[in-house]
Image (cartoon, rainbow, N blue to C red; front, side, top):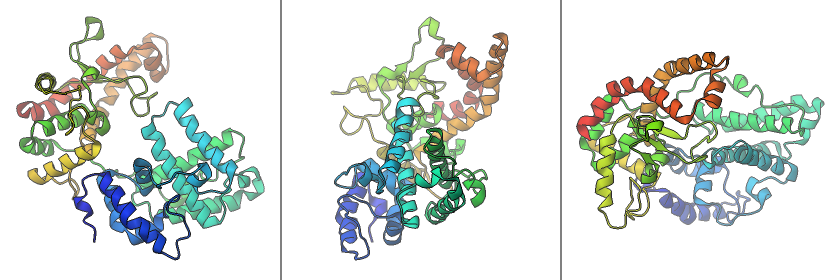
Amino acid sequence: MPAYAHFDDLTDYERFYREVILPAIRADPDMEIDPARETPTYAWLKSNYSGFVERLRREYDLSPGQFYDAVGLPPESGVDNDEWGLDHEPTVRALEDYLEELERDRGRADTTVAPRRSRLKTYASTYRGVNGTGDLLSPLLDETAKPDEIARVRDTFRVLDDHLGTLASKKKYVSAVRNWYTFVVEMGRGLYNPAENLLNRFGWDEDPKYDHPALSRDDLAALLDVADADERFLLLALAGWGLRPVEACELHLEQLVLDPEPDEGSVPYVEFAAGERKNARRTRNTVELLVGTDTVRRRVDDLADRDGWTGYLLPGQSIDRPISTATARRWLRDLGTRAGVEIDGSHPLPKMGRRTWYRLYRQQRPSIEAGTAAVAAAQGSRDAAVSERNYLDERTRREARAEAMRELVREELAAVFEPRL
């Protein structure tokens, strides 16, 4: 049996897929696919390599479809119809048009669009397998076909229900599919949305328990106590500043504003280029640094003495490149083992660090919104969100967030980080 737990990164999973899974697909007489151009169904992969699927989910938070996208599988790419596994060009075009609109017109980052593509591909291929057709559009143009089409979509999700795992995952798939059908209707390619009430029909409308809880103060302290300098800095970026794992791994010297100009306020911050962050149009471009700024300065000084350093705050073995998110996951897994820290029966994950910070932000959000509402009222606006977006510059918003967060961060995080950094 493969020792998936000993795989270091996605290249090991890719190698196993090419060397073990591909020959198994070719040898299976019931598998009528060309593995050079197509990937197996979720049901087949789960049935034959459940450990492979489970480790991808636990270690990397990836579905098989997301894994294929990440490593460039299948080995030979095909045209759009081959990629989607459908034989109905108008349906493929509608799927591609929707994803193009997300990226080009709505400003969604690739980290948002790629998972959406993966979920829609899984849904479309499952729909084809369950209903015997790749035409997802024609029934939407006939109101009399509505009851039967709603039933077909329901039957498709009954199959997916057996494989998706967590409630959070199921809700993400429903959201992706429902939003695509909404796009189809809005573009005049359909008369109704057959996925409109899926959450209610399956009883998935309750709040999910998300897979990645926050690290507690005790967890953080225990991890920091056994961490080396690189691991401590990673924890600081994740839990102390609330960066996403990829943002923490790829943090660069040029993004740091440690000594703001007088007209930029007094809070040091990380600045991202426009459109660089996930959900680019809705996400702020700066992240204030309320803890650990002296640590950052020391780290910059130390790294500057290394030959070949190119400015990444977490350089990898090749010092001119940053560490990968897979390396960050491995660091936290090893840290958890050394510190004896488990979260819900599993080792710590980078996402848990970000959730530590985000939990504090959610606590203070009412205070931030109250301050914005006061500005909105003074300007005669009844919508605080519009006021914040249109009338407050980034410096003012950053200072407002920092002011609301400062005391809580000091109470919850500074006391944990500062003695250990």
